[in-house]
Image (tube, rainbow over all chains, first blue to last red; front, side, top):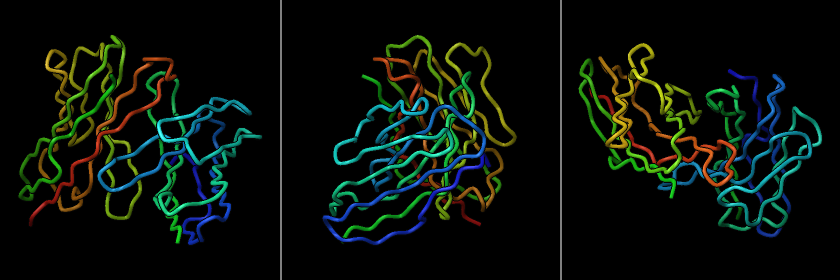
Length: 113
Length: 117
């Protein structure tokens, strides 16, 4: 347990509405990540952060934005949710700078109707 | 191209037997790391084991070992003495610094392991 929480854990929303998912860590890790998990695709990186206000795009960043104003919080925003963004979203932290192993939060199940 | 391939969508193993989950990778980066994660039906992602590209010995963690064959670009996970609680999805992942990725991980699509009593 690397002290990672995600909120909300479940959310149902309608197409076109904005949605923000929050990731919170308690151990001051520099790197944080947002992934989505879909059947048949494994985990795919959406965005990541390497420090406060330092973020970059991942493999599937279209339709998503992120912000990191404090070390402990990494927010993922869907500006206008679409049904294709129905997924399970995982936040992760990079636990060590040597091996880069990542520890994950519990996940958020998002359904866009 | 950086790629992780897990060719077994699903596998069955008898309780108490050993099982090997396959993972092959592709990278042009000489320095990389390989990881295995477990995802039980409850959904959390659990880090199991790590192997660095320069490590001379195969990594082991309890009943988990990583069969690292560098020339074949394979990093198979071996679970000894399977238990019912080992039933889960297993993901192989790779870390490289290729293309300025800053050591991000790329994941395979996973193998679903079912342990039979």
